Length: 273
Image 1 (cartoon, rainbow, N blue to C red):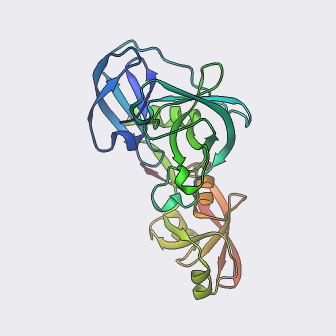
Image 2: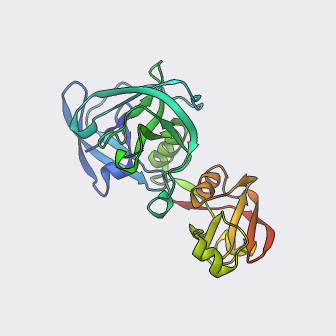
């Protein structure tokens, strides 16, 4: 069970993790009605899905293309724990956030809007709104209180949502920038074993030999510390910086190989999610 937002008069957008592998779903509306829905396409990299509804002529909200500012009021709407049509209020707490340690499970939890409006299980796929009722994001995740967090929720920016959803509706897939590397966290033990003279960065664990990273000379065991002019302290930092590039773009990067620093230029590739 999750939430969703009308994107077109007969299309709802939600999270990919809400629909999973299902292709036929049931959609419940605010007026109490229900209708069948068909999942048209999904994208795991941004965690988005588009669903065609049997019910037509749904009211379409305005999607805000610019990012909100920290401190702006925010409202989260959804069905947390099955409590339908629930609204929670807060502010925009931050922009361009990534959830630490998330890269090992998913690439979607980067470049997000942070809010302190309460988000709970079931809110996923619902709207994060500004005070004018415009959609500023699609709620995706939260850090639970068990982790010591208080009101740490995250949403996919609406500009990302509309871009990816348009691609899914037009082509059935979405295209993303691609480096051709698998990444891991640089731990003190790995740092010592490799003799790497840095305590931060994204560790290259594997390389697609036909991908952009291999063509630039990057090797397994390298640690990327800067990418496209952005300092890289973690895998999540690199994934977030990659989101802001385009396939075909030439991007500078700095890496540490053992005790030496090297500069390389990568031509960003592409892949579908």
